[in-house]
Length: 279
Ligand SMILES: [Ca+2]
Ligand SMILES: [Ca+2]
Ligand SMILES: [Ca+2]
Image 1 (cartoon, rainbow, N blue to C red):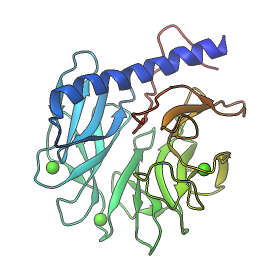
Image 2: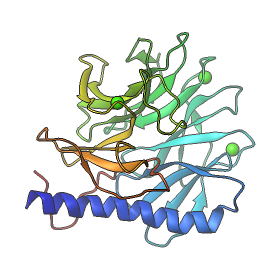
Image 3: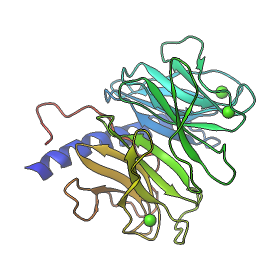
Image 4: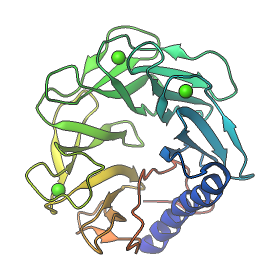
């Protein structure tokens, strides 16, 4: 029963991803620009993404796309607020990447960081109060920070020599899951000492814990849904596919069968399928 519910749940959000790729790519991608940073909204009805240096939103029910930012600077890495009406994103419009947010209905973005290092948005806390971002403020590392949307100093969540990226909050806001290593995610089939593993930590950066380290290669884009951990890995088939590590602690299970076109930018909606309950 549990497997069937999980399968239906996964089918829902994979269907959304497939829908997104089959509509927006055809509509927008003329071969010169890629679509990046796809993120499903918490209500499951929209997909935010980066295209041609701006933030766009695709609507799942209609397939319509709308442009959220329109600026000569490079706007990227959108992350949804819990309302599904507002996005945090990074932009170099003021000289280097900083954290901004904007309502998808329009208006001027709000700026949240001013540091000289590049600040790359990772996620918004499930209560909407803080934006988590990655920044190379310390030499040779990419650490995680967060900032209160109402102002104040940023808070450092990590301080080490690893790259901490693709960080996402757990749905209940109690913890963060993150991919850690020192490699470049665009380098496929990497197996070496800099490979990424998945870790969880408290929202203040304490109690960093290995949650998936069984593969001497890369595990990326982790997200937690229904108590299970979903991520992207090339550990089989020579290609990046979607994998699930059950919350019960069993070995990861491969959920897609791609052999030539890798899965990128995995994300999950917080919305649960109608008439089902996850335990
Ligand atoms: Ca732009
Ligand atoms: Ca900055
Ligand atoms: Ca690994």
